[in-house]
Length: 412
Image 1: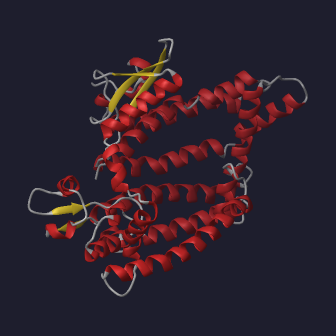
Image 2 (image 1 turned 30 degrees about the vertical axis):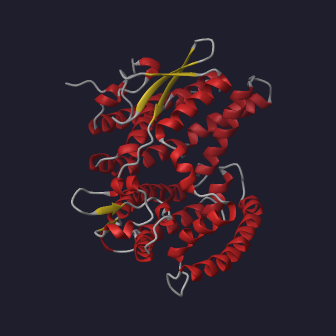
Image 3 (image 1 turned 30 degrees about the horizontal axis):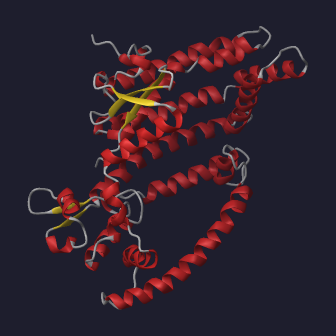
């Protein structure tokens, strides 16, 4: 029987996960074991009658989810960088289970009461908290409250249903949204349509069968459109970009609606006006009013600039002789032309200096010049993908600092 590398801390340098040995089944087993271990570790915290202390509350809490957290971080790194159908299936399997596991903890009134007891004892001077302990205690109580621990039994039951459903929706959306982006690729059969791209860029798009494929990136605007002279191809790329997820087997619309409704109901159940208020409270802004105060002026200024740009770009487009109606798929292309004419600058001027090897060399040199950090490649260590480069870092005095995994290659 093969030992699961995740079930104990790695013995590799700096506890680098043994990525090369991991399988989907290892993740599944580690998730199940991690959840069980955390509940087992927290049971004494929930059931003991001893007075609450830093040791029997905060320390127990802080170490209870070690295996589960380690598994989630490793799985997240692997899946985000180079997923497979097996990993997609695993996420959709474990996501609702993890939501239920989290609810079993955050909706446990016994655990919450232990934290409030510790807070009461600290306020009375019976327990001394250092700055880190005080922050962890306050933050955990706040998270319990925001999670819904104060709800009655009926409210908690509905909240658990919503959290499970949202986990299912988010996992499914992740897969379908990516598949829609892949399926939305634009195939080019006429080399002339790629006019504006360098020979190297054209070669990178070649599929080897007399065709070229433009993959979509995960934004509405596609960077390649700034350089495509062929207006028809620009339109095809743009329409493929905005149409993904809006029909066929990769239709995400019902998922989006169901997610929005579930989030709205959950927010209302927890006493918030809407999901945005719940989300903002857990972040730096703390309120949607604060978000609006920051983003409102920026949004208005951006709109004003966009309106002015639209006039300028439409006028310049008319001079190009590519048509009478300045459209959305022309915007990035004309903007690049205007920028070059206005500032004598374009992305093409910079690209020769942005070769991967040159950028890495400059980055590592800057780290050394500024902080004395040195990078030494470790070809004996394997990263989260076979294409990742692993470096060992040392401080200026030669003392070890850690490992750095460089992975900059996009994948379908």
